[in-house]
Length: 419
Image (cartoon, rainbow, N blue to C red; front, side, top):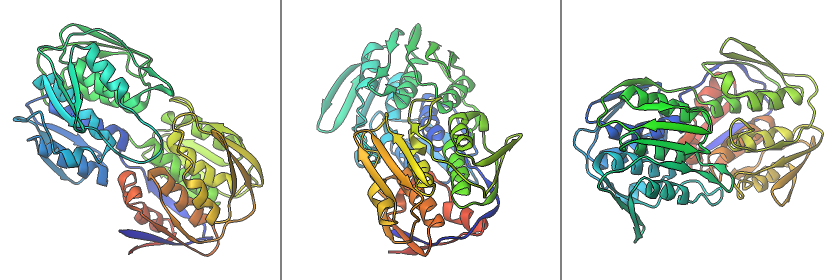
């Protein structure tokens, strides 16, 4: 396993280009199973999760090539059962169920894993598949599903913490080949869902309402191949904006979609960060006094849970008290103790973290617990005095394309070493 060594306290300067969205490309890769014809997906980030999903698709019989940010997937001859050990290790793998069930009318998928950030049950996925007419059996770690023919229906997907993003994606993919019309109520509204809908429409699917709480899908009998450009990663973009604010740096972020980032940009402007928008570019000018702010994570278009940890790292640097409330994942404060090793003063009170900022951070050995916690520790390490060693950075490689290289290009003193 690799570690990252960061010599902090150095301002950054330059331009960073945002990669394609991890949370968009993984369901789109699964959706390529819906057609016998080749699909070409461009703007794909070189991430361990993408490589892993490609292995899962190959285990189902699909031909997958990945070169120069372009994925070509040809799922002409596929089977309904993938590699158990591959599928169980990644949460996003649950998204192969919908396409397999829609196209083959049968799927056998292992229960998925992923980051340990709280309970993320698949009950809403299963509820939706049953509503479409699938018969489900859970046994020996597998979900087995079969149907004579999926039939459109009305499905309510609201959950305890709001709409399910992966569940919405999975049901959309199953419904495009179902007989009749499917209406998904309380659907997730994330940009990644809109991107999936655009890909499916490129295949020949009939979908309206993506990006709203009600998505309507008129089933078709067959789909064809398509070319598709993945949207930029709004979470990566937010991470670099926060990084610039934390290190009082002048950074230009290109290739982002600021229209997908309103909640994050609003909170950064509320705390006094100097961020301006020039077309699709974000210009961050560091310096100046910042103020503490409170945030509460919510489903899109609220403040994203995937930016909570990074924002907390910023708040540790600002004098005063900030309250950060997590409403999506109950265990997403595992980075708090590691930020504490760097000198942060943070107390947990139920679903909220009370951050007493401005005490100063000093480098120390820390350990990443999940993907976004990794990014938070990188931000804190860049802002801290002295040297920080971050272990288990394989989490970071799941969702940030060449982050250490991008930061070095901005002038950061950061390098990767074997443990």
